[in-house]
Image (cartoon, rainbow, N blue to C red; front, side, top):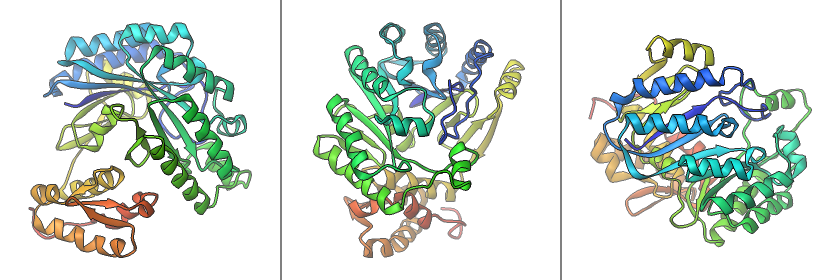
Length: 380
């Protein structure tokens, strides 16, 4: 096993762009934590390898008390074989990060903090409906660096009304804070979100894609020149500070997903838990796993290898594709990739298919174009 992901389905506010599973009511938080404890116990037989990473995601894990965090970590250590120094990450919002709370997190065993900054501009934060302001964004990171060596921040680019100069100022703030890891994502229009309604009603207009692409290239150029490794499409880390948890996902390692809506992978099949807090707790209380299971087909493996590989700095290993699925799958991929290579969007380096600088921004779209929709003849 590579890791355990714990989904904490609570937030103070609903961000306008977010479609992750969460509730803004903490009324049943204690019952939810008890259910998460129970799921950890129910899944302990699924762990075949030592746990290397533990990740508290959500939602907003920092809305929980120290006692909640300690209780879940105690369950992990009680029921699983955990390596001596695992990476233990907690996602947090700036407005939750008091000195006392961060010291409590450290005492609980958290050694990596991922702070959801999103922007250092009040106008952007207000449009997103974030619970913090720009001043809290800056102060929380400054304070966190005094308590944690391993700090990551999240930033969004491509926000409505955001110019390239606005984005440059955001990155300037980030660089001045000297955090060892930055995750940065393009704002996307997700279904059933407030942002989708605003766009549909004409209240908000999304940026032109060329402007978003310019912001992405400025992001990459600025952070790589500052010494960050661009090791995944949205991830930038100083040497020694790459996210071990996320790298495990991209390398196809196994992991358990705990909590409502959480996903897990055992090497052959994926599962995902029900995205409903009440249903999740009811089924767990009965000793049942509230999951849907999907066994990966050869087509699934082929498509996922492309989707993950083109986002990562190491690319899609052509030899690994051949070893896992057979020569004809490798040849098919190379044949289909040729037109993107001719356009300067893909290239082959060290026997791996990778995006070029020009193609990186289009990685997800290129992956979709390369996907198989049916079998290539018989099974490998």
